[in-house]
Amino acid sequence: NANASTIINDVTDTSVEPTQAMKTKTLNILHQSSFLMVISMSMVMFSPLPSLTRHFASSTSVGAAAAAAATVTSSSPQARAVKILSILSAVSAAIELFLSPLIGILIDSFGRKRPSILLHVLVTCANLGVVLFPGVWSVCVSRMINVVVGGFLVIVSNAVIADLFATTTDNNNSNGSEDENNYKNSSKNDMGSVLGRHAAFISLGFLFGSIAGGRLTEYGSERAAYSAALLFSVLATLNVALRMMDSLKLMNRRDATFGKWNGDTLRKTFLEAPLSSVQLLFHYGSHMRTLALLLMLQSAPIFMGDVGQVFAREEWGLEPKDFANFVALFGILGIVSNISLPLILQSFGLRNFSLFAIASSLLIPVTILFTDSYRYIILAGCLGLYGGTQKVGTSTVMTSLATESGIPQGQVQGEKASMLALLKISMPLVYSALYLKGKAWSSGSSDGMSNTAAVGLDFLTEKIGRKLPYVLNIVLGICAFGVTWQNL
Picture 1 (cartoon, rainbow, N blue to C red):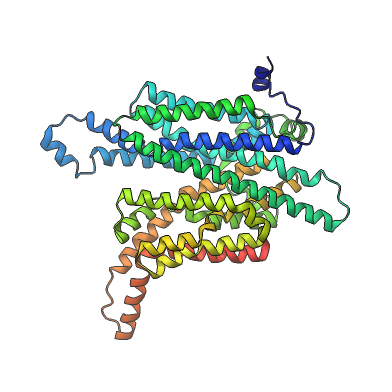
Picture 2 (cartoon, helix red, strand yellow; picture 1 turned 180 degrees about the vertical axis):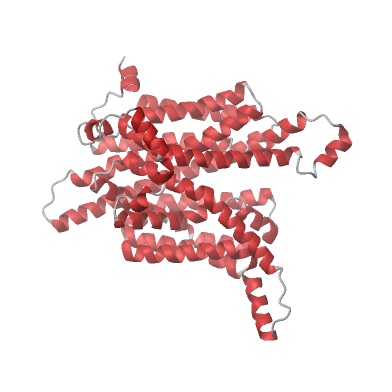
C-alpha cells in the first residue's frame, strides 16, 4: 500500500523545492518526534544508577555487618554502579567521536528519513530489552544506546532543518547583491528561529521526562520507567515512519554528487574518524575554521561533567534533590528563552543577538566569582536567560556557509558532532583538574611572604580558589564575544 511504499522506499517528490506547506509539515513532525524521543530518553536518564546499585546489592549476600562495612568502601554497590556509568559515558563519547562522520555519510547517501527510523528503532529495542529482561547488562546497553543515538538524532535534525532553509539561498533569483544579501540574512534568521523553536521542544521534553522518570524510579523497579519510555519511543518511531517526508532531494544525495557509498568509503571514513573531529578546523577554509573555533568556545562550558554538582554541594550545601530543582529551574528558563527566540531574532538580527546571548552567558560565572550565595546565581540566571541560546547564530552561519560551499549537510553535521564529542571527552578532565587545583591553592599557606603579599594572596585564593572552572568559563566567554564581534 501507499504507506508501506513510503516507509520502505521513501517515495516522496524530493526533486522539487519544498513549498511552505511542506516545510511547515516536516518541521512540525520533526518537533513532535524530537519531543517524544527526548521524553523517552530523559525518563530513563537517572534510572541506571539506582537500578545498578539495587542489582549489585541484591547479588551480594554478605550478612548485615559485612554489608554495612561495604557501604563505606570503594567496592560498595553504589560505588560499583558509579564506576560502570563513568566507563559507559567515556565509551559512548568515543563511539560518537568515531561514528558521527559515518552517520553524516549515511544520511547524505540514503536521505534523512530511513536512518532516522533506524535510530528510533534502536532506542525502542533498547527500552524493550530492559522491560523484558531487567538486569545489569540490559540497563547498561540501554544507557549506551540512549546516549549515542541521542547525539546521532541531533545530527539528523540539524540536517533536516538545513535542507529546508539553507538550500533555498541558491535557488532564488536575486535582482542585485543587496537583494541577495537581504534574502540570505532573512533565511538565516528564519533558520535560527527554527533552531530555537526546536531547542524549546527538546527542553520541554527533557523537563517533562526527567520529572516523570524521577517519580517512576521511586517504584523500586526499572520496569516502570522503561515501560513508559518504551511507549514514547514507539510513538516517536511511528510518527517518523508514517508521516515524515524526506527533506533531502534525490539529486543532492551523495550517490548523485560524490559517487556510490560502499565498503571502501565506510572503512576509510571509520579510520579517519579521529581526524574528522578537527576537519572543520583545517579543511574548509578560514571562515569555517573561525566558526568551528567559536562553536568550541561556546560549547566547552556545557561539558563541565560533575564539577557543577560537586561545587553546588560543597560550596552551597545543595543536596541532590535541591540540585535537581536548581537544574529544573534553568530548564524552564531555557524553554522560555527558546520560545521567545524568533521574536528576539527578528528585532536584533543574528549577529547582534549572538553578542547579546554571549554577554548574557557571562552573568552566571561572574556572579559565582563574586558571591557565595546560590540565590544570586538564580537571579543572574534569570537575567541572563538567553545565554543558553548563544550557539544558534554560530550553527546557523556554519550551516549556511556549508550550503554555499557545496558541502553535504550530513557530512558537516557529522563532523561537527565528532568535534563536540572530542570536547565531551577532554573538557570534564580539564574542569576537574582546575577544581582540584583550586582546592589545593585555596588551602595553601602564605607563610614566608610579606604582609601585603600575604593579604593579596589570601584575597585571591578566597575569591577564586575552587572557582577556577568558572574563571575559565569567563575567559571562554570573553574570547567568544571577541570572535563573534570580528567575524559573525
